[in-house]
Amino acid sequence: FSRAVASVRAQVQQEPSLETTKGMGINISCSHPTKRIQDYIYFYRQLPGRSPEYLAGTTRGSKELPDIAGQLTVSAERGSSALYLSRPRRGDSAVYYCALGD
Image (tube, rainbow, N blue to C red; front, side, top):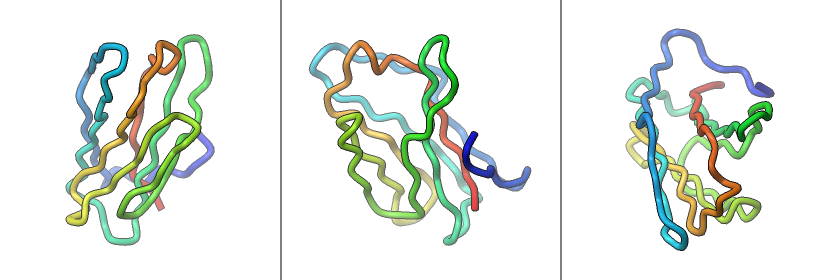
């Protein structure tokens, strides 16, 4: 990855899989109860047969991601985040990862 991931202190949890239908948005959530205020949440995705690609990162609040018609939101209490794809396409089918880092 192009970003450093925090040590073992950082625990993140994600759903094992999600499905949606054409035209329906999807929320990819991530739980990180050990996140500190200064920590960033990073999202990556890995398309089939490709290397992981960096999507976005933020410490809190929301960040629009026009390249993937989505939005990354880190909750105010810092315990969770979500990558929302408002108009997912067939080409967005991938493994999505969240990471907690500096």
